[in-house]
Length: 266
Image (cartoon, rainbow, N blue to C red; front, side, top):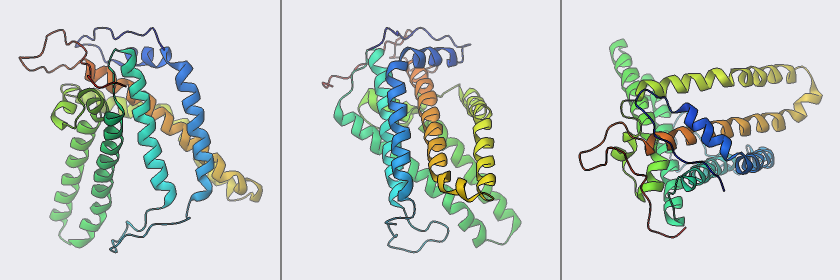
């Protein structure tokens, strides 16, 4: 599939260059997968607002789960797992269908946990009136989000490599790289800034032109698909590089860190 080989990553290196090489070496596979993601978003765009699944309890600001949201979450997690599986295969790490399924549902579960925390923040803020309590709630939510992102960044790679869910193992890929992770996150927003501005401009133009309004859902679906592909491929490659080259090692681990393999057949 690819002649790419995982190279040693020194402590002073970011790993971005290695991640870009990993992406470039798999472009014959990534391009068709990206096109499939675009097609999926275009096909699922008309499903927005259709067959909304009501929650058994009424929670303010959360509302109903739409079929489109459920499909996008499932397909997005499967797409990320497929991308990382391809990257790991070129590094000599074999995965199984069981670990891939576990990785998909592990990602979905962690995303739901983060979504619930974000949704509960305004509810908690409205439930209190004292400014000091509002500050405490904001700081707690902010700290949770930082911890959530640090532990979730390499979670998919960790599940695929180890065959089980271990947040401690997942964090090893990020340990001592936290500031690089957040700078990489900020840099990715800078790279996507023209896309955000384009999307905002199209929405503004669509308000004044009825002809564009009919195409607006398809344009937004295409932009959303390209953003999903960018996040999945970029952070999938970087998390793979980081997890296979941890900077914090336990005494029983080799100082050269041999790439682990899984015994189950692919």
